[in-house]
Image (cartoon, rainbow, N blue to C red; front, side, top):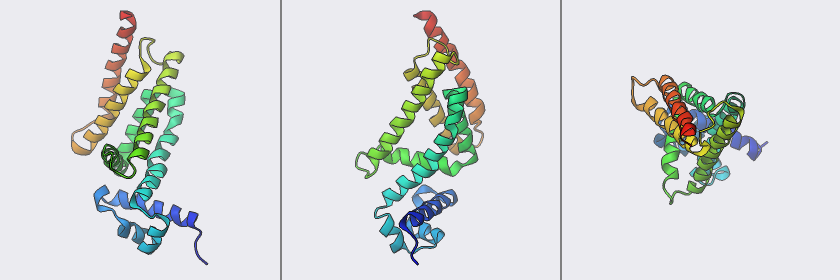
Length: 196
């Protein structure tokens, strides 16, 4: 009896996640995923006619799943704590960070078949952080002088930069660096209120 396509897709996506955990983004292709999923490459191509569709499914399950799981931290402790939790999750799962950075690179190429989707995902992530910062200011977790949009730019830049450093610098201490930088940013946000 053939496997329903929904089950087959789920199995292929799980296999792709494992393949990305084991190898660099650019070294994973249909053959590697098919072996891990125990399916023929032709069957993989039938349910994912283009490679980009599979990458989108992997990002949606793995990266967005991680973001959704950490969102409770934003609700409870704020935007900075949320991004710190994501940074910590990335340290535990460096393959996820490698995949995210590779996808960000693809998203910057307007000719990439999934660039629009990647762009939309990034924009949504930025808007989520901005919304969390609005709530933080209203709840008093962040200074009243903080502009949520500008603070989101700073926090996202810090988060992304420290993720990249965690992959490239052996002596990197991303969590300590994040904590130091956020402390300094908050001083600036509070001073912005005094200046107004």
